[in-house]
Image (tube, rainbow over all chains, first blue to last red; front, top):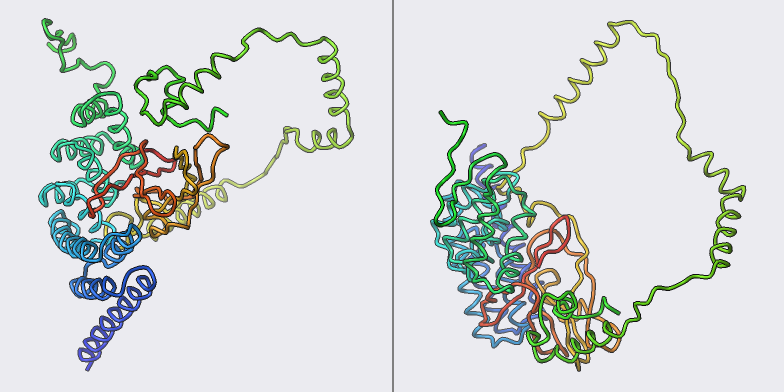
Length: 225
Length: 218
């Protein structure tokens, strides 16, 4: 009896949640997108909700497209592409050790995939994003770096290096702006990112640096026998 | 008026870029800024001795008012000596109670970290004031739309700063990363030339602003 009651509760609960999500989607899209886009997005969102994916990014993308005057078919295509990315991102985030990721983390993963970061790299980044780091934030920062033209592998190494060096989430958030500033001074995105990576893993005082200027020999460590 | 110059023009005034490096639409503003700075009179200013006397008289009369004296008396820190007679066991009992309370607080606190409960973009929901600036000479209206206002073209209008063609507004944004674009005359979407930009999924670009507890970083 208890088992039947529990099953009924679960079924009712999931049905009610789905119904509320559908109502929310309709309420958010009403008056903001064309009826054609609304119909298509509601269908895509219902499918995403049934798969346990976040629905809000899909609604926001539709609203953004409509606000920008993008033709309906392109808005629908973009929303459908995003739904696919969210599904891929969730699997990648799960592979990174977060069994039940929040919608924000999944959305961050989708941003990263969209910017050319591979699912495996997404998993790696999630794995190293331990508190106080937020995987949603680290994924978005890596995505923005890649979108700025930093090669994905290098973007990941930069973010991971900053985390390893104990830098704060605020420091990570500032990386895209710093790369942009470096590009403004004439560096390529890769060069700007390399400079930031060197700064993040800078040699602590008192240590002999690994880098040796051309034509010079590495200095001997006086403390080493 | 310096505050209303375009960021690139400010860099020109700082000597970081040359006039030739400015985009064509900023050339006129750059030349005007250089002209104004060049025309500034840098001769030392001599103040009349009577002015100093008048200022000091006003300061002394302000300091001597009864209200100020009362406020100073209330606000001046004083040393207070407190003597207590306690038995040693009461000190130990108090310390143990404080330690137990602290332990209960720490154990009862929910664990934080990534997972379904973590819904914040960037860790906290604190808001920070962010100033948006666009140089759009000839525009009749400018707004900023983005992920923070559901891409509403009329939710956050910019106001012109004088007649220089610079439009500006300040918004309170939650900590995290946001995408946005400027909307000129209600129809033309323009990326922020001073901020990083990413693909918006429709073949255009969105600007990105990172809001940290210390402020906004472009």
